[in-house]
Image (cartoon, rainbow, N blue to C red; front, side, top):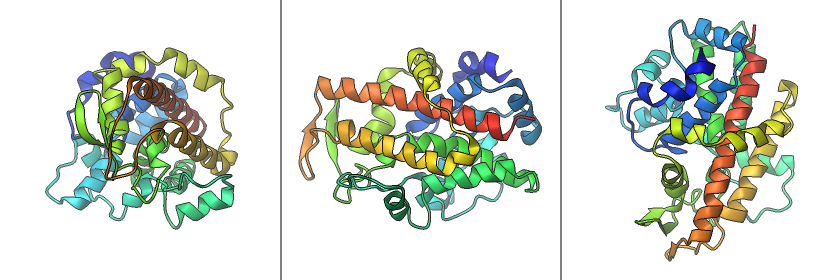
Length: 292
């Protein structure tokens, strides 16, 4: 069962990969949390859809692998992702984020949609949820939709996937010193450095978030009919975390900011809560879209 094995077997089943948004660890932690909250009917529906024993954690980084394959054709997808994406689509880079300027306040739904433009992560979450709810779509399309949804729900909960400051590409143009790492991109610090500092692997990470998961479960869960509005609220929540924590005290380039212990502590709390929210919200979506 997904629920019984999610935390115990997580790291053993995962192949090492290069760092990616939320990092491999963060994305798989979101998937592990979601797996632990799936109903039996949802678990069975996923098994039937995939036709083989592929877990959400195996799909968690497929979207990044697809993007990497487009950038570097010699890149080899992992076995699970290669099976789902035998012919990887192109033009997916903009699907991973929404660049909302942190100076924007207040932020209406219309403003968020303006920042989204023709394609962004909020639109993709709604799009692929709709694919999963449509039994008339092909099995291959639904398999890919599941892989994309697992990843993009995680992406939207990374604060720097929902925010930019002075066109800095979500902190990719900003350098910081964090822990014992010098001249690290702020975005990478939030993707990989902070999660890795919390735990050495995703199974341990997910198992440490009991209180955060309980808090996320206590928050209102979204009916599928309200998902288009809910994803905009998730984007606002991530943007607020970027304003309050990710960019707080961080100098504009070309300065390099040394992040202190207060920053590190605040950032770790946000990362823990956002990954927990991502897992809980992903499980809620799948339990509504895939239960028999």
